[in-house]
Length: 189
Ligand SMILES: [Fe+2]
Image 1 (cartoon, rainbow, N blue to C red):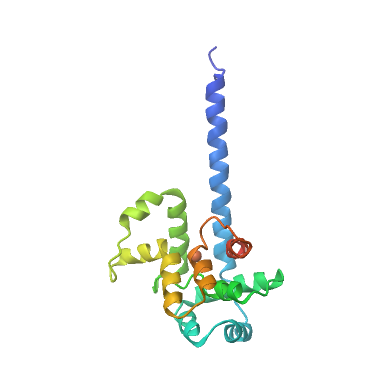
Image 2: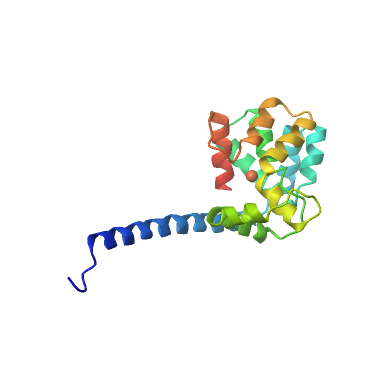
């Protein structure tokens, strides 16, 4: 009948709205995360936790991270401590999970752009990324592979096997209590 959408059209519309809703929620979550990262971390707290949970070698890796990432990492640790976690490898992983992200002066908003592209156009991002250091496309490559790069850096800096694995797996489906704790604390911050 003219003017009345067929049942299949209504189903398509409903499915489309569900997809749109899911993407909007992810977008809102990412924007919220972006603004959360602007919140400052108390410098004394940062010094305190770095000294408490990182070895000398790990500290130089932490110091080499951009300030925004350092702050994000301290907030992830803060969340875990608030939740009652005391495991040293887990708390060190909180501080070092993003240590493999490429050194870049790009502003934080590019990080948000990467996240959005990864979510909505992952194949485009993977096609542009290049493993050749020095190229701007390497930033994308480093971003996409930062878990493995970070795990490698920590293995070379004498990190424990558990710390290395926590960092390697921090964007994967968690399959242990500690991985789950890190995964969600990272998402919350
Ligand atoms: Fe990460």
